[in-house]
Image (cartoon, rainbow, N blue to C red):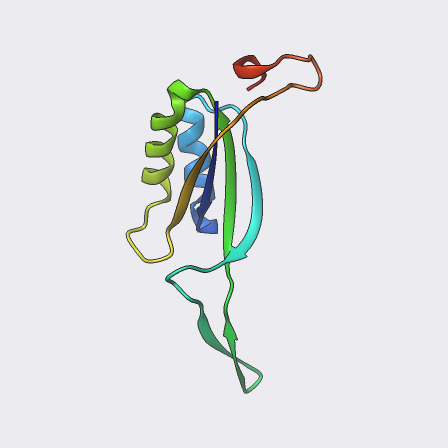
Length: 112
């Protein structure tokens, strides 16, 4: 099992969710977050004062999947979240040792 974490632009969340639904992903966790990479933020003017916005709004999408679904989920997120512009985000894949469904006690792939 793998935990796939994608940091994407907020306005691409619905596209990513719908695309993942179409490939059989039945659950995910979404967190509103802020961050920056090469995009580095920008300056804004507020009430006559200029200030720097270092951290840009992003969405963190987390999906636990069976090993045989990893490539499909990665390509799905990549296609759905891509705008072709700087700041599209990153995807991280982490090994997932165990998963347990609390309600039923199912473990492993059955818990996903």
